[in-house]
Image (cartoon, rainbow, N blue to C red; front, top):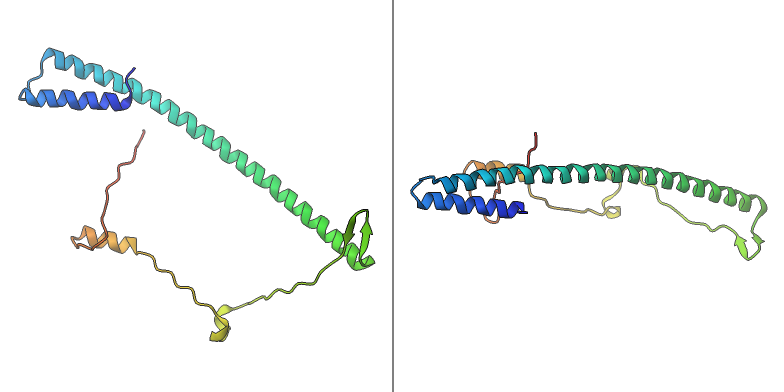
Length: 161
């Protein structure tokens, strides 16, 4: 059983032989090309079956992830409600113990800023990040400009109809 890589290499080798013969196609070479074409079709169908199977499996995984995230959200909401109920009990009855557990509260503080832009400069932190303008770079290179450290690479993506 040939791999797709082997089929491609055999095709290249056969085409080189045809080129070395000045483009003459012998019956043996013609038969080899036909066999390679048949092998390519069979192997491509096998690859496509694996691709479709894995894509369906990934879809199943994504659905399971969403289902588990929904369960986690329900649990988080339940835990939050139960903690709020316990806090209300502490506020109502004060600190108390139940078995080895002690229920009490602690104070914390939180700063809420409604509009960062309205703050005086000494109370702001400025974060600066630089990123390449890839759209402008692509247009510049396509128009013939050379920019050090930038190159345009053509990718070929599989299209199955």
